[in-house]
Amino acid sequence: MLLLAIFGSPRKKGNTELMMDSFIDGALSAANIELKKIYITDLKISGCQNCGYCDEHGVCVQKDDMENVYPLLESAERIVVASPIFFYGLSGQLKLLVDRSQALYAQKYKKRADSLAPSTDAGRKGFFLCAGATKGKRLFDCPILTVRYFFDAIDVEYGGELCFRQIDEKEAILRHPTALEECTKAGAAFVAQDG
Image 1 (cartoon, rainbow, N blue to C red):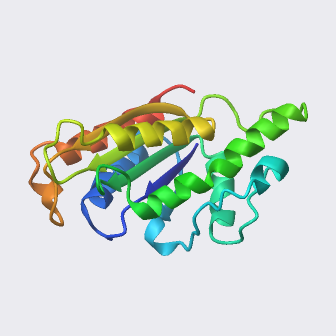
Image 2: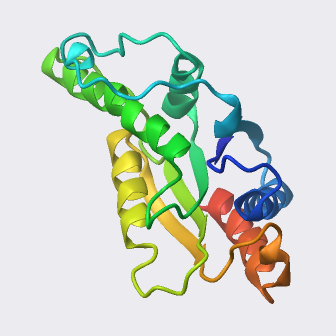
């Protein structure tokens, strides 16, 4: 099983990376998986230009690091995404990746229109990890909805989320009484799920 871990924070060794590391530890302890990591801060990704090229051709016209990301998004049986909250949304860097996944969405419908087989296998699942500084009641509404639609666009079933409020300064998650343990347990359960 291929587990793709997308580290969506521009800050290395921050709270969402610690959450992701615990999630991965749980996954590795529970199943025989192949792990691929994407650190969004290491990628050069341009924004979607809304040019319509992918609608017509099923691929993005832009040539950047997304060319290496697309095959992973298409082949991973499990995908976990971690992001901090920026203005009640995903990090801007991660949102670029999500927006550019429009090409995979367009490809899916182009293949259907051309009567070709679906581009992905059934049974793929995704999970979302998130931390935000405030205690706002609707703090996670927008990023959860965005990640749900991102997964839907790439034919991945939404498998849940873990979100923690009032996590701001670097390594604040370490002071949360249960967060990392919850992430470890979630990672183990996530890869143990049947397709």
